[in-house]
Amino acid sequence: MSNSPLAIVVEDDPYLSEIYTDTLRSIGITVESYHDGESAMQRLKTVTPDLVILDLNLPKYSGIEIFHDLRNQPQTAETWVLIVTANPAQAAELTEAEIESQNLLVLTKPISVDQLDQLAQRLIFRK
Image (cartoon, rainbow, N blue to C red; front, side, top):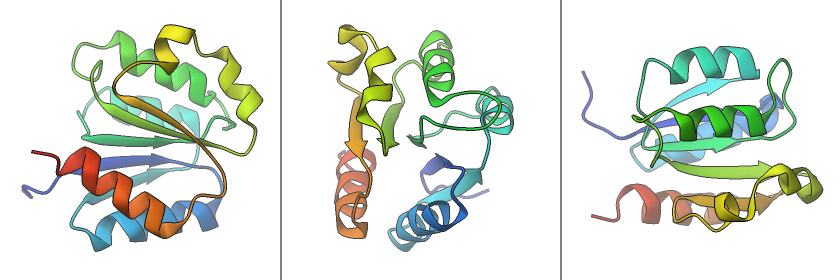
């Protein structure tokens, strides 16, 4: 079993999912990718990732539903989440307290590979 950090990428656009996955793997992070909310929710009940990259507009369950589920589970309540959305208005469903939480960043697509690389390194390898 690997000792590298684990990131879960939940993005229904295969191109973006591949970019996020390749970027994170290039800095030594183990990555699992999911293209719909249902499969991501199932997996997130069995693992505790170091980082979740989460699109909001997903098939089956929305990113907001996944985010709320993460925060309601003790093992993932403090997991870093990067919400990456093309429509910032969708993030309006988050409460002010959620948006201001210490372990959530909301980013507007497109994000650059360099931006993702730098954020992931700061969030995961901050120790």
